[in-house]
Length: 172
Image (cartoon, rainbow, N blue to C red; front, side, top):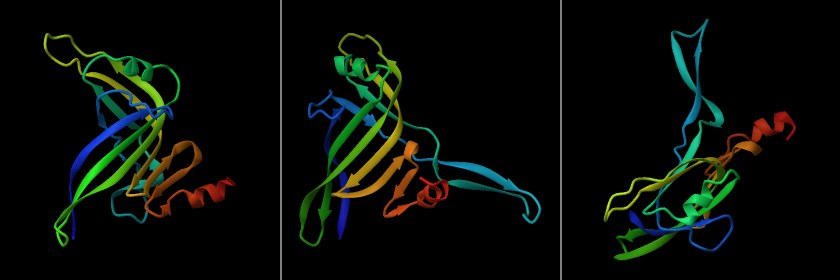
């Protein structure tokens, strides 16, 4: 049995470069289905239903320890692409060994805000950049597990693309 334990460490890279863009904590986007309330004849009340393959806004937050050139550059009014590469620790209880499994998240979107943080002697500034993600792809141990591409009508969870039929009907 493989038991997931923790994220050993990660690095953040920006705009296709292999240069780390600073020491940051990252809050990944929440995948929240867009919903609509269905009510009317033949239904005993109201039902909240998800809109197939459609997600509410997705935002990613990067919190830097101090104000950096990279944080300021990420807030410029142009599309930003981030690649977050992590090493997750798993424990194989049969082999009695710790194994490291790669996890990668690719995000693309426009900056929403830059919070420079606060100045306090001997403390971090907690400089925060928030980006609205239009594209999200998560790969776990070499296998794509999530791909959301809002502009191209892609909503893959596992091996299922929940917008494939929509693209077909729309002639895309």
